[in-house]
Image (cartoon, rainbow, N blue to C red):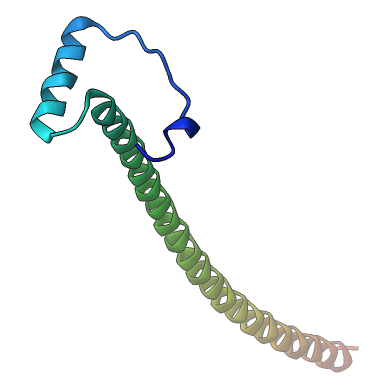
Length: 110
């Protein structure tokens, strides 16, 4: 094995039945027991990475949805504000008309 001197040995206690399963799988895959264990471990980490990527993608999708909802809410609020401004302007006009009418009546019935 290339670079074997750079690899730290790791003593692991494995139950006999698990050891037999690993040895059988190693033989089936044409690998040494050590290579099979390394492959199993690497595979388990890549599955964890895939799961993390899936969660990240799902989270990103949720954020995109929330951002689009935020934009829709802002637009709806802008429309509401515009309608309220129109209502205020209309009410102000009515108030001015009523003030003029009150002045007229005051002057008429003095």
